[in-house]
Length: 317
Image 1 (cartoon, rainbow, N blue to C red):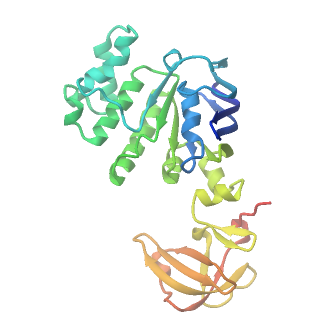
Image 2: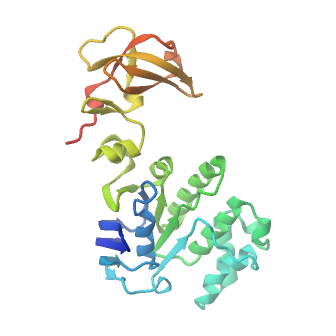
Image 3: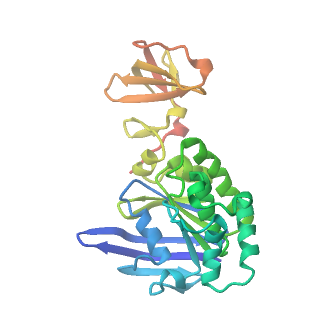
């Protein structure tokens, strides 16, 4: 069953249309993402779902019921904000218990401790936020939302304030939490790697609209628009054909029976697990070829041929 449905949702602010006719349907129990650049409307869409904004037009449905007029606390939805918004005068346990207390739910301490165990923080239940690291604060904020067992958990760039190594660790933990609880997660992010690695399905947004909704494999390998292709990763443009760097090959002699372009090597960058050959096309423009370390035998200034398999081409009308 669909836990969330957006029907032609519009949100206008003075002089700006932030969300422009968004239609989206999410099935229960999945991990979903809204992905796009700053100002594309993804956070406003999340706020419309959470009840922090009211649609100018269209409908927001939870479990088939229209909730446009309901306040955030009247929806069975929890939100984890980028700032975490923990109460500084409450311990980790107190922060997790807070929502349960406000709703008059019994056995609060037991449930709060179980939620802290889920995020691996039971040993720090009595610590105040000032004594917690950024990653630990993020876990407390997650536990505070998960303990309410909402039908939908909204995540507004919750990993943005963390350092790169911790972000990668928390990605794995977020995915594990979602699978363990079975709660539907909806994440807002501008980080392509984050959305691709976490999501069962993701919606790529641009200028208030959803340009494509599908699995990570679908949107990356078969993008519906040039914007989706470019936002999800680098693209080499050879006329009307777009080719990913990892699908672009380099040769000293022109290969037969495959598309190719003459070029010269501008630079070769060693990236640890691969090499990027940056080339200038004879026809103008630049391209990148991502090669395995064993293929690192090209030098700056060298004349080469860039080639690719026609099956790897992306074309857009």
